[in-house]
Amino acid sequence: MHVLISLIWLTLLTNIQSVPAWYKAQRDAILSTERRQSVGSTLKLTSDEEAVNKMIMAAKQGEIKSAIYDDSNYIPAVHFFQGRKRMEQSKVFKIIQQMPKGAALHLHYGFITSNAWLVKNVMYRPNCYMCVKEKVITLTGFYLTPPVDKDCTWIEISSERAKSTDIETFDQWLYNNLTLTVDNPEVVYPNINVIWRRFLQYFQTVGGLINHAPVLKDAFYESLKEFHEDGVQYLETRIGLMTPYELNGTTHDYTWTVKTFRDVVNEFKQDHQGFSGAKLIIGGRKRYNGSAILQEVKAAMSLVEQFPDVVLGYDLMDQEDVTHPLLYYVSELLYPEAHKSNLPYFFHAGETDWLHIHDNNLIDAILLNTTRIGHGFAIPKHPEVMRLIKERNIPIEVNPISNQVLKLVSDMRNHPAAILISQDFPVCISSDNPAPWEALPLSHDFYMAFMALAASDDDLRFLKQIALNSINFSRMTNKEKASALQLWETKWNVFIKRVLDSHNTFTEV
Image (tube, rainbow, N blue to C red; front, top):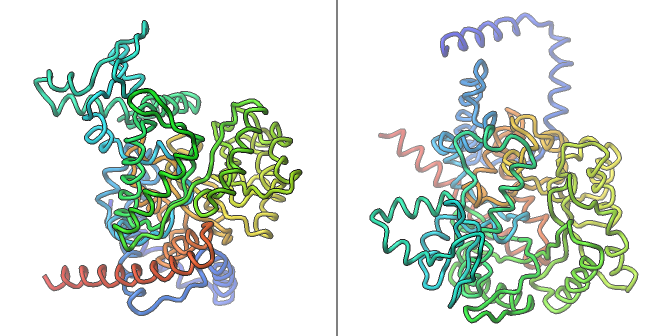
């Protein structure tokens, strides 16, 4: 096969040499114009960056050429569950994994702390119970006395583990109850509604763990640690108006949650000098009624006022096809403006395959002055929306693997963000909910963006630009942003040198 491909490329090159000069000039002009329009095209690379660029582009072109006549070999063309292990062996991925990625701007607390950590560091704890129904864990929680439930049996996990003759197998069973990953995703999750039910079940299962006040503190810290280790220096994460509980059953209000998050972030920054910080976006559910959303809007307004250095604004989330559109809540969402208050919005919108149904959320998001757009999968279907986004420079938070796992797209090469990237729209790459599908905090999504959303000849400049975009499109203050950019540049230069040094060492050997 490799010999055949080489012969085809050789034939193509021979034929190109016979193309008339005038034709080639016109063709090259079109290609050049397109290349100048894509994300990162205006960046200039240093000589060291050019050397790294040659390395990563040789690896990228190698992966592409090996899959031209059998795209089952092309990792972005297959489901993430089936391609992840191959991806992690890719030279492109190994370089991307090392790079400083800037910020992750579209995340959800409860879905970003790895399952391995939950199993090994939370389920081990005393008084941690699981509710098991037909060998499936449906609920978890910390109790002095577990609930009595006719539908399932509450079992203390540490006691059950102690009785096990094979601890490793027992822990794997716990892990399997959390992960969405399966070998045959197309069979297990045949449509979007099935995968969303399993996705929401994940949060129901882990909710009793991560809403426990002592765990919440540790999970905040662990999430920052995992993202930092994956090259992320700043986070903005959505979080509901949580009321964490103590072992005795007492609860804290959501003000306590925000203060705890702030304290954990400050502690983490002291422990890790290469970290810029993290902030919160309050998230509501599009399945609530209007009065409930109005109460959340008022609470978010209060939190932004009390904690302007921590709480950024408000969002509405859920499976977009089957819940209320933004238009349903317009009166509630206009409440701050009517009361001379500023509540920034960060709306999920266009996370759908449909046209002119709930994808019209994009229009309402823009009219409601959204700060950024979450997902925006349907944007290219709306020419006027595209024009307004470009004109107003509204950043789009693209989450490639989430869109594939939740069945908006199967072959990542068909992801509509490729259209936005080719026209230099304000795009940043994030990971949404990496924990349920065992993705790294950001590296897997960056690989997908580079290998499938970007053009085959988009290079290191694209990767550099989306990292810069993530910081520039964040809601840090100007002072924080300047400091973060300076820190990122230092990290980037170290990354370039490290890649060059490792390549030179390999070459010498």
